Length: 182
Image 1 (cartoon, helix red, strand yellow):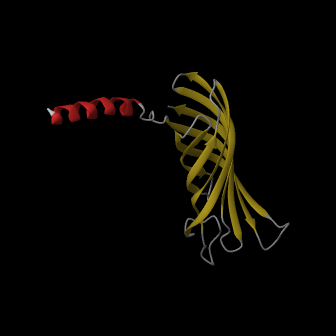
Image 2 (cartoon, one colour; image 1 turned 90 degrees about the vertical axis):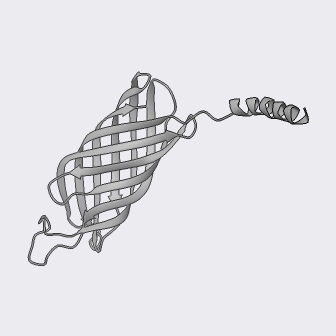
Image 3 (cartoon, helix red, strand yellow; image 1 turned 90 degrees about the horizontal axis):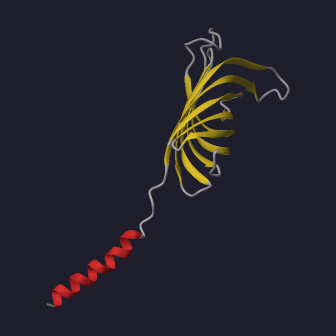
């Protein structure tokens, strides 16, 4: 009888604990396509030449809301510019309120794949150039418009940069559209 009473108390106490479990966080996936401007600058010359290439960029972001205003996640992307180009994988933090029209801002840091050393007798646009993996960062902003409960379209701009590699620094500026599924 004493065992049965203990079991009943345990079952009754577990009911309220179960109902207080936190709700699962909302996870979203966002695909982006953009026009991109790739820049290569030289740190040895403050006002020196920069090389530029234009093309496209693709990105995929995954985010999980930690509260109504903040989301954490990751972004993978690549510039689709004529050689040289860059790719990135970043951990990100996003600030975005809830609503139908949602302005947002994002910062992140992670790894960047960019052009490394090139053969002495080759050009800087040669496919024989090495690939360098460096640390980098991203900052972005945009606006999303919620079409349905779990689907939104948006406009974004972002700046992605890698750390200096020797005397050279690489960066990509992109302007594009996004499609978000939550």
